[in-house]
Length: 302
View 1 (cartoon, rainbow, N blue to C red):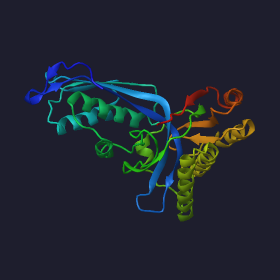
View 2 (view 1 turned 120 degrees about the horizontal axis):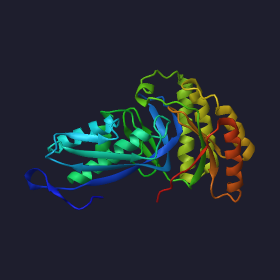
View 3 (view 1 turned 180 degrees about the vertical axis):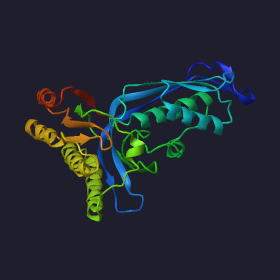
View 4 (view 1 turned 90 degrees about the horizontal axis):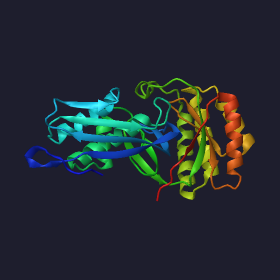
């Protein structure tokens, strides 16, 4: 969406303030490597946390600026879009996000997708998902947060593999092991997965694809837990097994993690009549284990 037009761009085109948003994820339901070439992939778990971007073009300004100042990737993306649109490169980009950084919640991906849409709205430029993917592939590995669905996504090559569909809303009782992970650096590390591991990831992808189609939350939880355990050889989380134990004790669906981050969460079916009791029990036990606990809500799409 845009606000009231307020200035003229090149060739007399009207420019406006552009505003947009993108949701984040709580880690990934599944992430690994398939047997095929360039087989790195993930399956998203969208949550109700957002990055919001506001772009105000100003041809009279000496250049582009971003707030907060450390959002340099979003500034670079704005420069790329402005150059392709042959628009004077002046203006202010402001990003406001409820997604913590470096935890595995797709904060950077959400920043960039929201930015691409806001800049396009301001300039009157079309910005379909494939165009966003082409830009983001030039910047960093990216989550599939530009699609309103649970998706299988090739994050290193930044391309959609498949839209899997939507799931009923779940609660995620989340904890954080602390610190932050640089996703760009993480994705340069060699992955120690064997050919047998890659075949297992293919089977897990088939399972979660069928589970989303059936809206089978129990199977989704089982796949998420299996993926979290397989990821321990790549980025070990000391609290994973204790979190799985808590999940089993309170009757949760499974444990989901930020495979390239520091977050872990217990999945709960919000439709279950005992969900509130399970949530309270999970939060109490997680607090005893880790300290701070944050509850997230996953997104459903129509």
